[in-house]
Image (cartoon, rainbow, N blue to C red; front, side, top):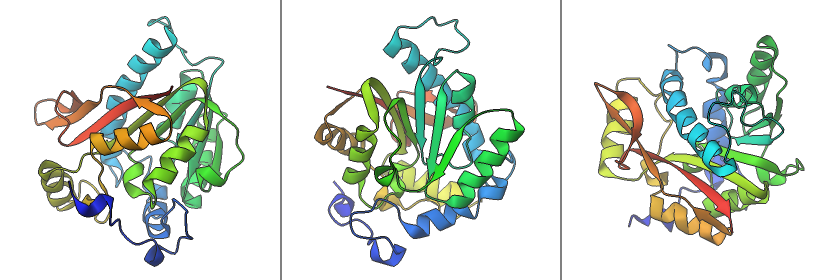
Length: 256
Protein backbone atom coordinates (compact mmCIF):
# COMPACT_ATOMS: atom_id res chain seq x y z
CA UNK A 1 0.00 0.00 0.00
CA UNK A 2 1.31 3.45 -0.87
CA UNK A 3 2.19 5.84 1.93
CA UNK A 4 -0.21 8.27 0.24
CA UNK A 5 -2.89 7.13 2.66
CA UNK A 6 -0.85 8.16 5.68
CA UNK A 7 1.00 11.11 4.19
CA UNK A 8 -1.43 12.99 1.92
CA UNK A 9 -0.47 16.19 0.17
CA UNK A 10 -0.31 19.11 2.55
CA UNK A 11 -3.37 21.31 2.90
CA UNK A 12 -1.36 24.36 3.88
CA UNK A 13 -0.10 25.21 0.42
CA UNK A 14 -3.64 24.96 -0.85
CA UNK A 15 -4.82 27.60 1.58
CA UNK A 16 -7.41 25.36 3.24
CA UNK A 17 -8.25 25.51 6.91
CA UNK A 18 -7.71 22.60 9.27
CA UNK A 19 -10.34 19.92 8.82
CA UNK A 20 -11.66 21.33 5.53
CA UNK A 21 -12.00 19.03 2.55
CA UNK A 22 -11.56 21.64 -0.17
CA UNK A 23 -8.10 22.30 -1.54
CA UNK A 24 -8.00 25.86 -2.82
CA UNK A 25 -5.49 25.01 -5.55
CA UNK A 26 -7.74 22.20 -6.83
CA UNK A 27 -10.80 24.47 -6.81
CA UNK A 28 -8.87 27.15 -8.70
CA UNK A 29 -7.67 24.61 -11.28
CA UNK A 30 -11.20 23.45 -12.08
CA UNK A 31 -12.62 26.96 -11.83
CA UNK A 32 -10.37 27.97 -14.74
CA UNK A 33 -12.04 25.28 -16.85
CA UNK A 34 -15.59 26.54 -16.17
CA UNK A 35 -16.08 28.42 -19.44
CA UNK A 36 -15.18 25.36 -21.51
CA UNK A 37 -16.94 22.73 -19.40
CA UNK A 38 -19.81 22.21 -21.85
CA UNK A 39 -17.57 22.14 -24.93
CA UNK A 40 -17.48 18.45 -25.88
CA UNK A 41 -14.27 19.06 -27.83
CA UNK A 42 -12.63 21.36 -25.26
CA UNK A 43 -10.70 20.81 -22.04
CA UNK A 44 -13.51 18.68 -20.57
CA UNK A 45 -13.85 16.41 -23.60
CA UNK A 46 -12.89 13.34 -21.57
CA UNK A 47 -15.70 14.04 -19.09
CA UNK A 48 -18.18 14.17 -21.97
CA UNK A 49 -16.99 10.71 -23.02
CA UNK A 50 -17.12 9.46 -19.44
CA UNK A 51 -20.59 10.81 -18.63
CA UNK A 52 -22.62 8.22 -20.61
CA UNK A 53 -20.70 5.42 -18.87
CA UNK A 54 -21.44 6.87 -15.45
CA UNK A 55 -25.09 7.33 -16.40
CA UNK A 56 -25.36 3.73 -17.55
CA UNK A 57 -24.13 2.55 -14.15
CA UNK A 58 -26.34 5.07 -12.35
CA UNK A 59 -29.49 4.03 -14.17
CA UNK A 60 -28.86 0.37 -13.39
CA UNK A 61 -28.17 1.20 -9.73
CA UNK A 62 -31.27 3.39 -9.45
CA UNK A 63 -33.53 0.71 -10.92
CA UNK A 64 -32.04 -1.94 -8.66
CA UNK A 65 -32.14 0.17 -5.49
CA UNK A 66 -35.70 1.40 -5.86
CA UNK A 67 -36.97 -1.61 -7.82
CA UNK A 68 -38.30 0.74 -10.44
CA UNK A 69 -39.72 0.21 -13.89
CA UNK A 70 -36.72 -0.12 -16.18
CA UNK A 71 -38.76 1.44 -18.96
CA UNK A 72 -39.61 4.55 -16.92
CA UNK A 73 -38.33 7.76 -18.45
CA UNK A 74 -38.12 9.47 -15.07
CA UNK A 75 -37.17 6.88 -12.44
CA UNK A 76 -36.12 9.65 -10.02
CA UNK A 77 -39.49 11.44 -10.09
CA UNK A 78 -40.37 12.55 -6.58
CA UNK A 79 -36.80 12.06 -5.34
CA UNK A 80 -34.03 14.49 -4.44
CA UNK A 81 -30.47 14.23 -5.74
CA UNK A 82 -27.21 15.89 -4.68
CA UNK A 83 -24.15 15.92 -6.93
CA UNK A 84 -21.01 16.96 -5.04
CA UNK A 85 -18.15 18.32 -7.10
CA UNK A 86 -20.69 19.00 -9.83
CA UNK A 87 -18.46 21.14 -12.03
CA UNK A 88 -20.65 22.97 -14.53
CA UNK A 89 -23.51 20.49 -14.19
CA UNK A 90 -22.60 17.72 -16.62
CA UNK A 91 -24.23 15.08 -14.40
CA UNK A 92 -26.83 17.30 -12.70
CA UNK A 93 -28.73 17.97 -15.91
CA UNK A 94 -29.27 14.29 -16.80
CA UNK A 95 -30.35 13.62 -13.20
CA UNK A 96 -32.92 16.40 -13.52
CA UNK A 97 -34.16 14.89 -16.77
CA UNK A 98 -34.54 11.59 -14.93
CA UNK A 99 -37.04 13.40 -12.71
CA UNK A 100 -34.97 14.34 -9.65
CA UNK A 101 -35.08 17.61 -7.74
CA UNK A 102 -31.34 18.31 -8.12
CA UNK A 103 -28.82 20.27 -6.10
CA UNK A 104 -25.23 20.64 -7.30
CA UNK A 105 -22.37 21.70 -5.02
CA UNK A 106 -18.91 22.67 -6.23
CA UNK A 107 -15.84 24.15 -4.58
CA UNK A 108 -15.32 26.61 -7.46
CA UNK A 109 -17.79 29.51 -7.66
CA UNK A 110 -17.00 29.82 -11.38
CA UNK A 111 -18.31 26.30 -11.95
CA UNK A 112 -21.51 26.85 -9.98
CA UNK A 113 -22.17 30.04 -11.94
CA UNK A 114 -21.51 28.37 -15.31
CA UNK A 115 -23.74 25.46 -14.31
CA UNK A 116 -26.62 27.77 -13.38
CA UNK A 117 -26.41 29.63 -16.68
CA UNK A 118 -26.38 26.41 -18.70
CA UNK A 119 -29.28 24.89 -16.76
CA UNK A 120 -31.37 28.03 -17.28
CA UNK A 121 -30.65 27.88 -20.99
CA UNK A 122 -31.75 24.25 -21.02
CA UNK A 123 -34.96 25.05 -19.16
CA UNK A 124 -33.95 23.02 -16.10
CA UNK A 125 -34.62 24.07 -12.51
CA UNK A 126 -31.43 23.01 -10.68
CA UNK A 127 -30.05 24.57 -7.50
CA UNK A 128 -26.31 25.21 -7.62
CA UNK A 129 -24.23 26.19 -4.59
CA UNK A 130 -20.53 26.99 -4.28
CA UNK A 131 -18.95 25.74 -1.08
CA UNK A 132 -17.94 22.76 1.01
CA UNK A 133 -20.63 20.13 1.35
CA UNK A 134 -19.98 19.48 5.04
CA UNK A 135 -20.42 23.16 5.89
CA UNK A 136 -23.68 23.70 4.01
CA UNK A 137 -27.13 23.43 5.59
CA UNK A 138 -28.84 21.77 2.65
CA UNK A 139 -30.67 18.85 4.22
CA UNK A 140 -30.60 15.24 3.07
CA UNK A 141 -31.10 13.59 -0.31
CA UNK A 142 -32.35 10.31 -1.73
CA UNK A 143 -29.42 10.10 -4.15
CA UNK A 144 -25.93 11.44 -3.44
CA UNK A 145 -23.25 11.33 -6.12
CA UNK A 146 -19.58 12.36 -6.13
CA UNK A 147 -17.93 11.51 -9.43
CA UNK A 148 -14.17 11.87 -9.85
CA UNK A 149 -14.03 14.03 -6.72
CA UNK A 150 -12.62 12.16 -3.72
CA UNK A 151 -9.13 12.08 -5.24
CA UNK A 152 -9.10 15.90 -5.12
CA UNK A 153 -10.13 16.49 -1.49
CA UNK A 154 -7.84 17.27 1.42
CA UNK A 155 -9.38 14.93 4.01
CA UNK A 156 -10.97 11.88 2.43
CA UNK A 157 -12.47 10.53 5.68
CA UNK A 158 -14.10 13.88 6.46
CA UNK A 159 -15.40 14.12 2.90
CA UNK A 160 -16.99 10.66 2.99
CA UNK A 161 -18.50 11.43 6.39
CA UNK A 162 -19.98 14.65 4.96
CA UNK A 163 -21.48 12.72 2.05
CA UNK A 164 -22.93 10.16 4.45
CA UNK A 165 -24.44 12.98 6.47
CA UNK A 166 -26.35 14.14 3.39
CA UNK A 167 -27.82 10.72 2.58
CA UNK A 168 -31.46 10.30 3.52
CA UNK A 169 -32.65 7.06 5.17
CA UNK A 170 -33.02 4.42 2.49
CA UNK A 171 -30.96 6.50 0.08
CA UNK A 172 -28.35 5.57 -2.50
CA UNK A 173 -24.81 6.92 -2.90
CA UNK A 174 -22.68 6.53 -6.03
CA UNK A 175 -19.00 7.42 -6.28
CA UNK A 176 -16.38 7.06 -9.00
CA UNK A 177 -12.64 7.62 -8.80
CA UNK A 178 -9.35 6.55 -10.37
CA UNK A 179 -7.61 3.57 -8.81
CA UNK A 180 -4.03 3.97 -7.57
CA UNK A 181 -2.27 1.49 -9.83
CA UNK A 182 0.67 1.51 -12.24
CA UNK A 183 -1.87 1.47 -15.09
CA UNK A 184 -3.60 4.65 -13.90
CA UNK A 185 -0.26 6.42 -13.47
CA UNK A 186 0.76 5.46 -17.00
CA UNK A 187 -2.51 6.10 -18.81
CA UNK A 188 -4.27 8.88 -16.89
CA UNK A 189 -1.27 11.01 -16.02
CA UNK A 190 1.58 9.97 -18.29
CA UNK A 191 -0.49 9.52 -21.45
CA UNK A 192 -3.79 11.42 -21.11
CA UNK A 193 -2.33 14.51 -19.44
CA UNK A 194 0.86 14.19 -21.48
CA UNK A 195 -0.93 14.52 -24.83
CA UNK A 196 -3.61 16.93 -23.63
CA UNK A 197 -6.67 14.65 -23.39
CA UNK A 198 -6.92 15.78 -19.76
CA UNK A 199 -5.64 19.22 -18.66
CA UNK A 200 -2.19 19.04 -17.07
CA UNK A 201 -2.28 19.15 -13.27
CA UNK A 202 -5.74 17.62 -13.03
CA UNK A 203 -4.53 14.47 -11.27
CA UNK A 204 -2.03 13.64 -8.54
CA UNK A 205 -1.43 9.92 -8.55
CA UNK A 206 -0.62 9.70 -4.83
CA UNK A 207 -4.14 10.95 -4.10
CA UNK A 208 -5.84 8.18 -6.06
CA UNK A 209 -7.66 5.73 -3.80
CA UNK A 210 -7.97 1.98 -4.08
CA UNK A 211 -11.31 0.14 -3.75
CA UNK A 212 -10.09 -1.37 -0.47
CA UNK A 213 -9.30 2.07 0.94
CA UNK A 214 -12.64 3.48 -0.19
CA UNK A 215 -14.44 0.51 1.34
CA UNK A 216 -12.72 1.23 4.67
CA UNK A 217 -13.69 4.92 4.54
CA UNK A 218 -17.31 4.09 3.73
CA UNK A 219 -17.40 1.50 6.51
CA UNK A 220 -16.09 4.10 8.95
CA UNK A 221 -18.93 6.40 7.88
CA UNK A 222 -21.56 3.68 8.47
CA UNK A 223 -22.02 2.74 4.82
CA UNK A 224 -21.74 -0.58 3.00
CA UNK A 225 -20.02 -0.48 -0.38
CA UNK A 226 -21.42 -2.44 -3.30
CA UNK A 227 -19.39 -4.43 -5.78
CA UNK A 228 -17.24 -1.99 -7.75
CA UNK A 229 -17.38 -1.86 -11.54
CA UNK A 230 -14.39 -0.84 -13.55
CA UNK A 231 -14.40 1.97 -16.08
CA UNK A 232 -12.00 0.75 -18.72
CA UNK A 233 -10.71 2.03 -22.03
CA UNK A 234 -9.97 0.31 -25.31
CA UNK A 235 -9.51 1.69 -28.82
CA UNK A 236 -12.45 -0.40 -29.99
CA UNK A 237 -14.92 0.41 -27.20
CA UNK A 238 -13.62 3.69 -25.85
CA UNK A 239 -14.60 4.23 -22.21
CA UNK A 240 -16.91 1.46 -20.99
CA UNK A 241 -18.04 -0.44 -17.90
CA UNK A 242 -15.68 -3.32 -17.27
CA UNK A 243 -14.58 -5.96 -14.80
CA UNK A 244 -11.12 -4.38 -14.84
CA UNK A 245 -10.72 -1.95 -11.93
CA UNK A 246 -7.14 -0.98 -12.67
CA UNK A 247 -7.85 2.38 -14.30
CA UNK A 248 -11.02 3.77 -12.77
CA UNK A 249 -14.03 2.37 -10.93
CA UNK A 250 -17.55 3.27 -9.81
CA UNK A 251 -19.44 1.97 -6.77
CA UNK A 252 -22.67 2.24 -4.84
CA UNK A 253 -22.94 2.71 -1.08
CA UNK A 254 -25.88 2.37 1.26
CA UNK A 255 -26.40 3.07 4.94
CA UNK A 256 -26.61 0.03 7.19
